[in-house]
Image (tube, rainbow, N blue to C red; front, side):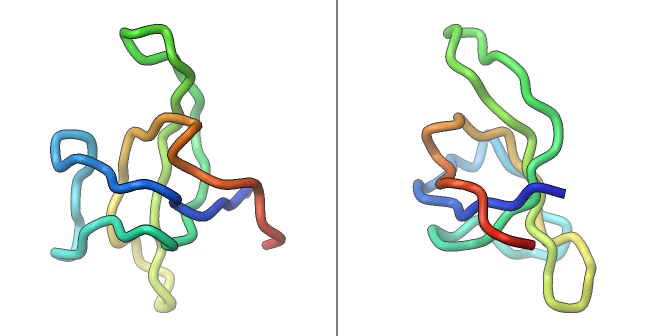
Length: 72
């Protein structure tokens, strides 16, 4: 699974929290499926997984809102 750091704030309309947490700049996310936003910009579904292995939140992000891949 590819992972990357979140480098921008994500608006509430584009994420769902599973445990009450919210996306924070610097969170490392797992990249899932790529897609194109209605404005034509590339996006990706991402998920933040806690140290306990449970999903914290999921979001639709623009590719420009995540940094380069990090080693797993």
